[in-house]
Length: 264
Image (cartoon, rainbow, N blue to C red; front, side, top):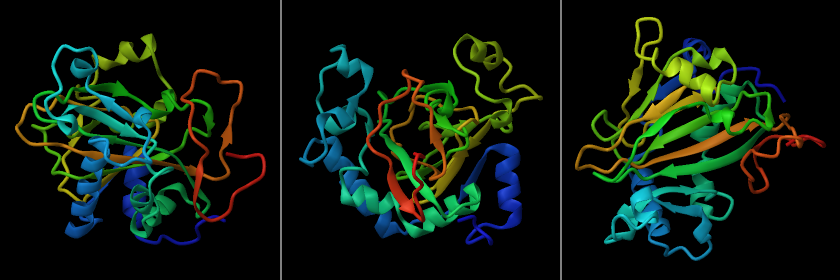
């Protein structure tokens, strides 16, 4: 069912999202909600949540390849993913009404499914950069390429510890990947294609379109930078089964509204 009114956002906020491909909303979560999410995140990273499979925990490359010895399991983790399909705490976040209301405003629909989720740990010193990319360049089996990610700051995300950076308007380029993307990366940061950092206080959320170019730098500070990204799509989206090199995802969970036969 199409959304007939805006639940949370203003018309100007929706316009800015459509123009730039991203939008920051401050203080969506309370301090208590952030603290509970942070504590549970570290339990998962430590391998102490038995119903989360080991395959959902990825260490930083230097630890995976044995270049550095793991002294602290939690601070060695690069990324946690496919969490909300297994865990009630993480699903509670993914289906949080305050977040889903904003997603409904941005997607223009109350019929919403979760594509997946990723929790980026980015520890001090060893937390590596994430190069420029479009999410739908990986999720290219989902059409239309019009998904929205909600990236929640669990810690304060700053320029020094590797907050997200966006190139506004690039979601209107269509999908660009591989060598073609490299043609344009050197132009990012120019007057024509400025780079906009998106620092966030803990509990604030940045929402971004699945085709907007974004990246994050290495964590050069002494402060952690955990961010939990949940990816949403309209339940009316379609999956192109002929695309065989897209990520293999768990069954898509209904977040709100109706599901549709023959769709995702």
